[in-house]
Image 1 (spheres, rainbow, N blue to C red):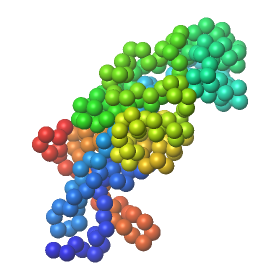
Image 2: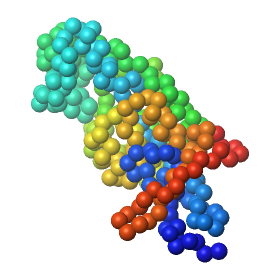
Image 3: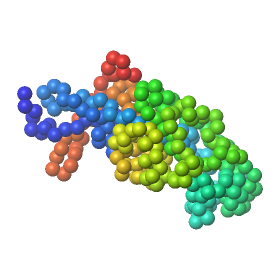
Image 4: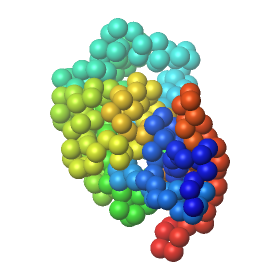
Length: 272
């Protein structure tokens, strides 16, 4: 039977809105006579930022740091946004200065002691257990997984200790190991090469919008990670790991693509 005219150009994607680039969230096969496509998840790679994605929200961590140090609210963010503060972070992330030198420089901006400042700043940084669980599920399902972090240094305070990242994901990329940092396209290319997965087949989650813009321009589907539960839910949906597979479909119209229908299906045998 010929497809109805208004359904002749359609696509379907897995998930309930995964973020920028969500169109193409799945490969599609024709099924039935009415233009439906049954979506197979096409994502073969997952790239996660570390601080703020695999951990608690950094805004909350900073607020608690300021209270613990008895400094004025938003003091840290003002120092971070200053020209000197931005340069200190840039140099640390590129591996050009040690964490100890960062401690000294940033403490001077805040007017507080420098001893183990990074450790004090990240005192309330805790694991985002739902996202870590999602990372394990994705890897167990055959998705290639990576952590891509603008490095916070490792000594005297190692914020990555205790996460055992090499056992959690397939690839770990720290900016200071490569002398390049997000949002530079080059560090995404390094990560994709190590994953051996093309950009169009990857989902990338980060809490910084500038990093998402670069990834989306390269063809990745991106998720702005601001809340642990919501981030885990959206990633599960995109990767086809949710308890039920939610499909969205759209049809081509003169001005672009318009969502036309959504439907949920229980997982097929062998899919969890």
